[in-house]
Image (cartoon, rainbow, N blue to C red; front, side, top):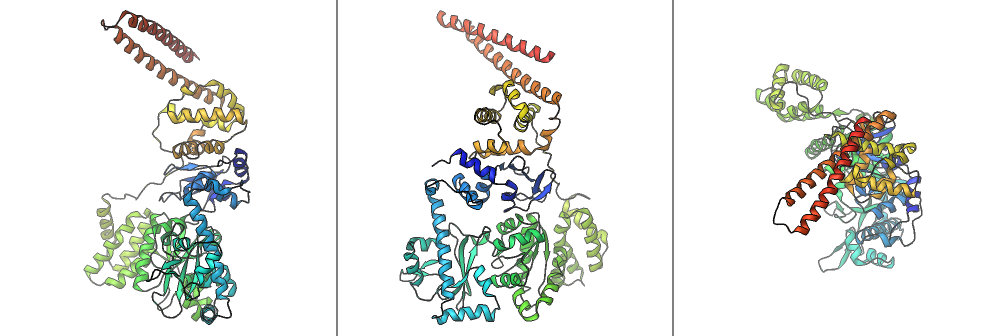
Length: 610
């Protein structure tokens, strides 16, 4: 099923691209546009631009770009129809009838699993409130009395209880219209030793796992009876991946943006306790295995992250790994050390808010944290220990800016009791050159190595799309073959088609024509957002000069093509073995080509005079 054009235009008119993208990316104002770290590739300097005026996004680092639909397709990993569905549901636009007609088999499966999880969460929550179940009452006492959670927190985050009866969950789901196969596919179902389909979380407290949009994508279960492992999670499924999920992000993302930073803890209870205490810019990594995908997910919402993992050896190792992954995403990282044997949850419950908040305010830099660990591990009294510490910190000193490097080298020299020059030489030796800083900042003005005529063509396209008063004039000025590369010709063809249907159309409309063509999406968003393509376009003489440039290059290409054709025909005529009839045809073709050549030369001379 295809969407009516009027329906797509209704969505584009209703949806502000800045509002939509900011649900996934931490946008900052940058003149008339907005800027952020690109969510589609790793970078340290923001090169991702959103233009509210044009309804377009573009990354000058990886080149990806397009309109609201292509953004959702890319970031959610869905097809065009699914992207339309997601946006329509977000903004309350009613979809055409028979929505399932345009959902693929995979999309339908994801839709069913999400619905199964929603129904299953309601079941688990109802079981937790069951006054007839001793096990459920025990689970409720554990949450509300032992762990001190509020009932509204339990309800908001979808915490429940899975009954220990082997078929209770499956029977309920089947009554709701779900199959055993879907239960198994969701990961909540598991086959027992005898081949019986069981609830993976039976007899456990259940924690609903949400994606950043608030959809339930899986569950975790905590044992109440000392059963090991203490926690079990939904395995990876078509809708869930533990390494790509942050617990609580759906509820915390607004606070993260407002605070300008995110606090990352390890477990569900750490998150829930801190959230209740008012630390609402908090998320949990669901264990110590922090991943690059989780780092990338955080980068959508903030550029500063504070890690607050356990202070045991596993927690310290996880902190170092987390810092490395977050810094690779271009994020600023701080560390909070919770004094052993506490974690954030137990510290709050045993010492109170005041103590917890004081410790949370004592953020350490990565350098200070790592130096502290190295000193604890090696000491600093011997030459060998000093060498190991300096060598371990050299990679950090290589990549920071020159001011921080100067200050950190002074700090390290004082701590170890060595000369600063010794540390400088170690950094210079590792870097391979003196004073070389790591990396270059990318800027919005692109460094594309493109011929002048290609740039002129892009500027012409930009002018006619942005200036309605020029549009008709420029459309009459050119032919499709005046444009040198195939993608520019495709753009011109699409623009002409749009002009016949709609007088006032935009870059977003043009991007919609090529919704499934990433190369064309990239080209359109590049033209829309490149600042150097705007230079002088408000002046008549600049536009006319661009027209002459494109036309002259088009004539030059045609002249060269005709010359090649003339040479080919002349070569064929020189062959005496050709039949007379064939020779007469070639002579006539040669005469036509010569006339064409003369006309091209005449036009070139006229264009030079003009």
